[in-house]
Length: 369
View 1 (cartoon, rainbow, N blue to C red):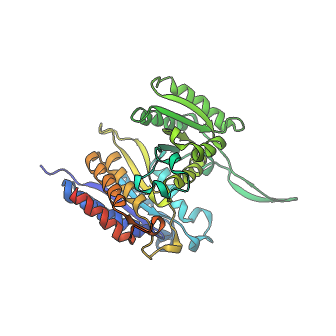
View 2: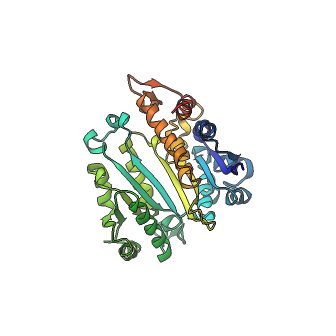
View 3: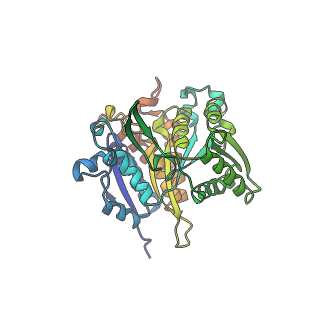
């Protein structure tokens, strides 16, 4: 009996998104050939591309198609072409709406350093060579979604307000996932907050401490967000799993991206609740952490590693294809070890490649491993 094809929705998006997506598709084709797994894909619009075509950053019917799928891949959204668009129709709202509608509450961003690129990090090699951390960021609450959020005028000038709101269940499910993940790693969890100032952070710290009682085998530490910003540069290897709220996670993971030498190298996974079919799997939206980089779009300069590794995470977390996921990760490491380079990580001795050429190089190594 032939195994049913996995349904994957593809959102190439804006800027360099279509280029890195095409590279990832080359790798998935190689995975399909080597492991005999079948992928049923559909390409959908999001962000600026969707706004230009439909007048909205993501269509409700495309969100519905995701609900019937196993996973989704996304390239990138946004760019200066849509800066004048009203807030609710901006490209980024397409991504936020997708996450919220699909209940994707946790964003996983692994940070590690490829041996071949350890010397390329702007941080000293001895500080980054053993880094293997995972940031788990809350994705559907916090200041990005709080209301009211608006601007107005008073007699003395302009005023703006944003609202930071967190509810107990939002914090608990995120922290609990972090503990579960830590159990499969080094059994250390750092919970990041600003409990010396913010009431929302004091609630966060209280709930994290309560949940920790269910995980006596995992060591918990609380770290203030400003201290964490310092630790990520001075001693990143001391951390295993980091859990934090939406805005803090957004900022810290961009900072952490420099550890690996290029933001183009890092993948992410946005996960929803566990499926009710008993598989233990979760629907996930997988994307590189970089932006749309419109200044280099269409020139073959984009680094597709983050997109390819995001596809690898999809194979593992949403499709249950562990061997295939490991083959993708191994092929990327091998390609980099063989000197394959995109311009952002190029060296004098490496082979400089376009986005597509790098994708082909990884696909070849998947097939020939």
